[in-house]
Image (cartoon, rainbow, N blue to C red; front, top):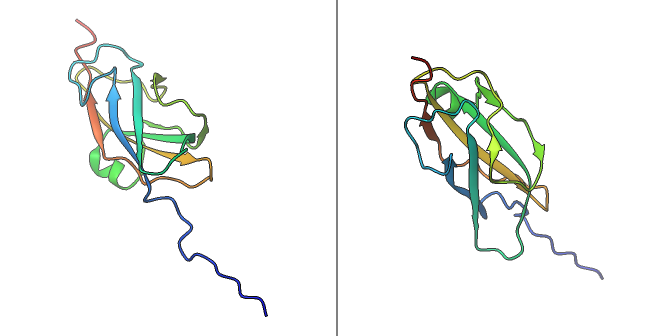
Length: 129
């Protein structure tokens, strides 16, 4: 007689958190005067040997849209990369004093997606005189 035991919970979604989101090395900055700001984040997990294998960034003009996973300014889709620093914004043109909202999720080596990070923001400076 052979007995097979399987785990009912195979998802790592709750074990990895995307935290410490920054734009130009600042948290929720005001007055960004670079039209392609750099974005970064960190992973938080209690597991050993966890690494990012892909990411997705959503950037939106409206926080409500972003809560519904709509990146009307930029949606990277799934990008196969372990990079989590100095990701250049490549979305729609940003305007003076525009406030944008963004969030990130990653995939680990087991191809499991994390939950979305918290929503953070940045605000553009006056870009023209």
